[in-house]
Image 1 (tube, one colour):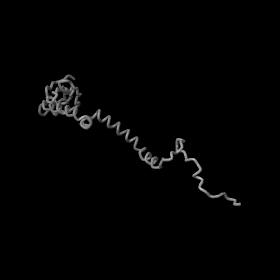
Image 2 (tube, helix red, strand yellow):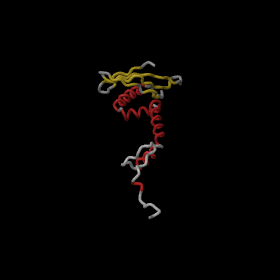
Image 3 (spheres, rainbow, N blue to C red):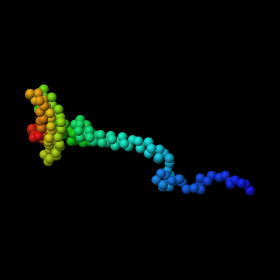
Image 4 (cartoon, rainbow, N blue to C red):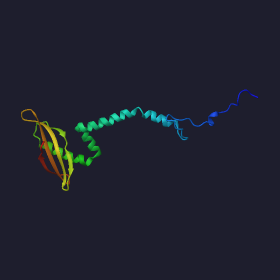
Length: 151
């Protein structure tokens, strides 16, 4: 009789080891699944921050808002651009107009209207003035009427 038991691989007889949550490991689970999640885990805070920064920028910076609208809603963006160009054509030379708000788009049965276009321009005495406009387009996208709006 031998003092030592027979050397055999005892790993086959045991249950699969549990994962961190205490659940038994699935037979088809690979270690590559855990490696992939470990690589993505450090990126989660950065992705959350980037999404929040994009949201704030789209609300506060007109150029970013304009870009988002041109990518995700091109028809509405084109309507606003038509109105914005008409308003800028109405501004006197040397007034240095600056867009503050591109307005809100409303669809009607006769066409579109953009209300609340807000620009800042340099006045005669050198002070900045805020100018409001409303724009009305036909169903074909042609300018129907451009009217000064109320603040």
